[in-house]
Amino acid sequence: MGRSIVWTVFQKEMRDLFRDQKTWIGTFFIPLVLVPFVFFLLGHSFSNVEEEARSHVPIAVQGNGELMEQLKAIPGISFPKTADPHAALQKGELRAIVTIPDGFDEQIARGGTAELKVEYDSGNQKSVYAREAIEEAVAAYSGKVIAKRLQQAGLSAQAIEPVHAVYATVAAEELPGGVLAGVLPLVLVVSLASGGVAVANDLIAGERERGTLESLLTAPIAASQLLTAKLLTVMVMSCASAAASLVSMALIMRFGPFSRAGLPIASLSPLSVLLILLTVLLLSAFFAGLELLLSTLSRSVKEGQTYMSGVLFLAMIPSYMLMPLHPADISLPYHVLPVFNGVALLKEVLHGMPDPAHALLGFGTAFLYVVAVISVSARLFRREGAALKP
Amino acid sequence: MIEVHQVSKRFGAFTALQDVSFRVEAGEVYGLLGENGAGKTTLMRLMATILRPTQGEIEIAGFSVTREPEAVRRRIGILFGGDVGLYSRLTARENIAYFGSLYGLEKTQIAAQIERLSRMFEMEPFLDRRVGSFSRGMRQKVAIARTLVHDPAVILLDEPTTGLDVSAANLFRRMIRMLQEEGKTILFSSHNMSEIDKLCRRIAVMHQGRLLFAGSVDALRQKYGVHDLDELFMTVVEGGGR
Image (tube, rainbow over all chains, first blue to last red; front, top):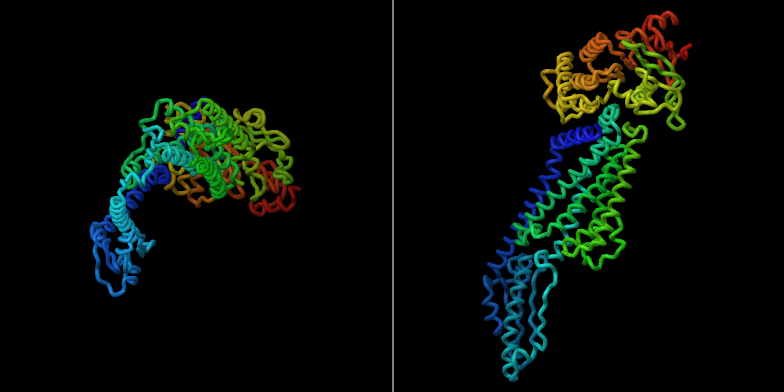
């Protein structure tokens, strides 16, 4: 009977939620459609600007020298005639002004260092691209001069490169640990916390405001059954939100403008997947319990919304604090503190180096926090008059 | 059927009910009359086991609200006025069925009850529409059907006609009479004396948490020698029940 009541309430909550267009918009449309669309739009805009900047590089050159030949080799370069180059640069008609001083070639020929002045507009992305193109041309020209000087001195190129270092990463090849293990826990933890906020607020504070909670508590069901069903509902919505954010991230990484790498979740071992799922489950239970507790405490939906913003901070602070740290640098207290323990464990797993002791400690403490937060929540929910409007 | 015995309820320093006693017989429609703040809703909530009395005892169908709350809840159906406590994104049928499931009814029993209640309250045309689009009267019908889905012996109606227009209030009174014919025990609270007079032979008059009178409307008229209902109510309140 108890289980069937929990299932009945859970089914009703899910049906009610999925008939609410706010659920579809907040949980699925925004992360799965809107966020990737904004990224694609952003990327499209960036690539358009870059293409335009590369294909058309109008600059002004004041003075003359051998460097001119190298500058003329820049793809898309042009030298339009302008009466006032500085005004044209500010208007964006020119991307840069190169000033080659008198005696430039002679200074180089004497073996000295000639000064070259390049003016550009750092606030204009196209001008920044022009600066980069000029930098490359200058570097190429400098390389030629250096080679010539070395030849004249009877030296080889190795003479100015006494050490040639080769750098190799030891990070797991399939998991680009640095970026992914930094960002993924943040996305997961924040979406687990945020995914349940509106639902939890509606399921207790909202129901109380609409008078449905009072009617519900006149039925012969235990408050704990009701709370269990509501907890499961919030957990499911939190996990759905986290899953939608993961898919969104995978779409952006696979098809987005900045990377074609994709989200290498498929390359995770079964043990890693299990550890991630357990962590997600415990975190979602913790956030759901906490959110229901706040919803029970708040006297209105509006008040609940204010309280809930604290939950988002609770998710963001550990994620951001641990983001730049390598798992080996995460000290023991972080494996015990709430939410920090989940983030730390996720980082270890995503770096391909889960520590069994840390996993046990993290799961154990996370379980205790879940029990504590749900117990307090249940106690508040069962208190006299909890269903009544204040 | 309902026995209220020297019940008091305090919220901190505030006394919401003070030493209230009365008895409602089986099959009776009993009126609980009082202005806003008289303590009617608090008393209903004590009967519904949502609140616990500070002192005294309430028994419903032989069960104590403090010692056997679940048994009491199985035997009562309660409808709070103002907010009728329906889920607006569910259909009328789903709302009623949901409460049927919470009372442990089988699917076939729920279906039969919905069939019976929808015929009784003429709800067939909108049974499968979502409640969010309903008029106040339609919502009230669904709410009372939900209250009756488990066929309770005792029905508690707290200001059920609040916000209803004249025709909806009339329809509601017809529904009460139908339930009375089915032998239900009904406790009906209102701040409207004429409404109570149309439905109830016996009443309890409450004011500021105290019971001023409990007995038949005729006895009340005789005691004060006043026939006009509103004037009668004011006489009782101003005289403090003396």
